[in-house]
Image 1 (cartoon, rainbow, N blue to C red):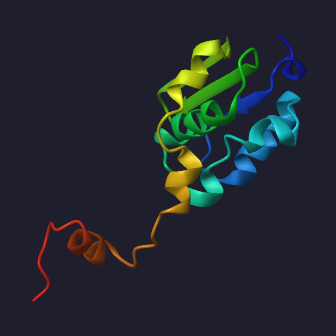
Image 2: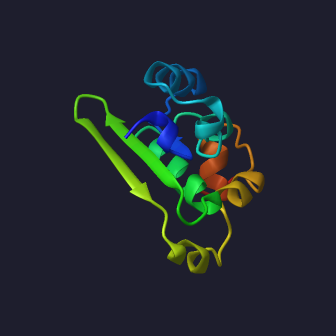
Length: 124
C-alpha cells in the first residue's frame, strides 16, 4: 500500500514536530495525521502516545477508511499495522471521545498538588 491509500496515519509522538517530519518523509499529508495527533494536547505520553492517537482516530474514522498505525519503543523495536475500519465502529462510539477527555483536562502544578487532588496525601 502507498500513503495515499490511507485516510489516517498514526505515529509515535514524543513531540508534534517528530510526527510531522516522519509523516512527510514517508509521503503522508498533514490531513492524514491530524485526527491522531494528540501530543500538542498531552505532551509526551511515551509508549502510550501512539495508542492514544489511535483511539482518537477511531473516534472519527468512517467505515471503509484505511488506517496506518506505527508504534515505536525506544530500544524495543517497532510495529506497524494497516487495517480498514469496519461497520462495527459506529456501535462502539457510545462513550466519550478522546477529544472530550482532552477538553475536560486540568493542568496540575507540581506532583504534590496532583497527589492531593487524587487523595493520596493530605494537606496539613
